[in-house]
Length: 67
Image (cartoon, rainbow, N blue to C red):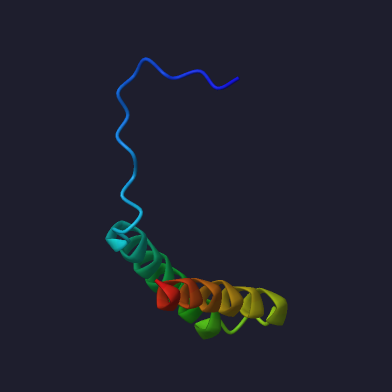
């Protein structure tokens, strides 16, 4: 059975996506900076890691575009 909490909790405003958009933009920026640093390293040729960063950026960009 569902028990009602004794705390007064306001429901989340599901229409306001500004916080999520800001968070995604920060993550994209941070990941792009990290990827850029990895690409500049002469001793770093791990293509799997580079691909993973690109996929993380792309997935966040897709989420951001859908909001």
